[in-house]
Image (cartoon, rainbow, N blue to C red):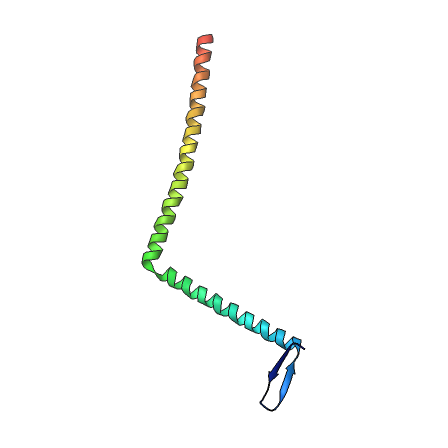
Length: 97
């Protein structure tokens, strides 16, 4: 026996385990469904907030720009090192020749 309930005051009945499990699953699905829609409503409200959206775009753009400029600076540093190495080789060949 999984559970006992009262159908009416005069007639008690016994629920089977399958019925209780089905009710539990239904309750879980219902809870998850409501949570999903609550999160979705909050997300929509956040996305519709113009000031917050503008702030998010600015922050995202600033971070992306920092990453791009960091990679560009590293690339320029590598190119400068390659150029200095090439100049050293040319100077070495000039004195040897």
